[in-house]
Length: 424
Ligand code: AMP
Ligand code: GLY
Image (cartoon, rainbow, N blue to C red; front, side, top):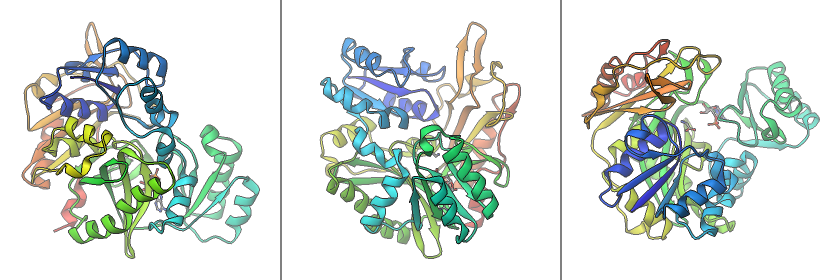
């Protein structure tokens, strides 16, 4: 079987790693990929939004399965185009990817189907949003409706901050057309947990839980990033919470999408807040999380291709998802200054220490192969994942392995997984 993965980040490297372990796969391609993915797959220089070129390549190589990693091509309709061309693709169609593509859509969906989430209002005009804020209580959360690279959420402590936020999103269009509509949402407090799931349109099977660390600095300080590290499982995600979510959130979401005539096939990522009043949905993503995938997939026992094919063929109910009874931690190695301003092009040394290992992995996020060697090519450079018999061991292993690699301006958080100390 020939597989094409669309994307170029740490998530796609982790997906490629799982795909490479499948007994059914002979050839793996990745568009466009990165230096690490290039060790497992043939990388082809085609961008994720070049739909016609992706389709042409898949036809030419007679690709059996195309796995779409990121939200931009999913929300843009890549799966629809590939299916129309008679190709098999894993991921939601455009009308289902709206679950991530429009926050106003998902908030209305949750309200209609009684799925627990923060109270909210949606606005098309800045003056209406500003009028609403006059009588609101703070902190309050502003969310640009559309895709904004994970940056379209502003937590505002005061009326003044919120006014500036409305201006930035709706008038200055800081996030482009994503800010044509605005969701203003109640501020929730609690622990965050990410639960990823496979969905075949009607059946949902959830994967083991994970927790991300979104802020750039230790102690959750500094600007929001794409994610500086993760651990899995979350000790705060108890069997009781899981039961509640299965009953009130996961299956209801899948049923709601089907009832709306938008059956969802692919990955639903539930971003949850465990509040005092119970779990609430903060957001949905229509894809694997990054860097959640880097701690979830290495612990999955199933053949990923079998599970993905079951999703496409609507027979996920026959699959028993199984995860190892251990833990994993991923520490992101970034370029100092990320996510604001950082340099690229520094030589990375020590990568060979990960070769052939199965207890720890070096997933590439922003790297490039040059004649001199592999160099940094992005803000997030590598994700060092290690397994361990429990979270503490996994964390020790990940931080040890994080020392093996060096490059100029290497930066990481030192407290990934610190929350687990509070769990015992
Ligand atoms: P999102 O892109 O929706 O995941 O939001 C990014 C981050 O903003 C989340 O991971 C939370 O940390 C925070 N956030 C989003 N919505 C809320 C909310 N209603 N209350 C508190 N924090 C929130
Ligand atoms: N780690 C959060 C995300 O993938 O959106």
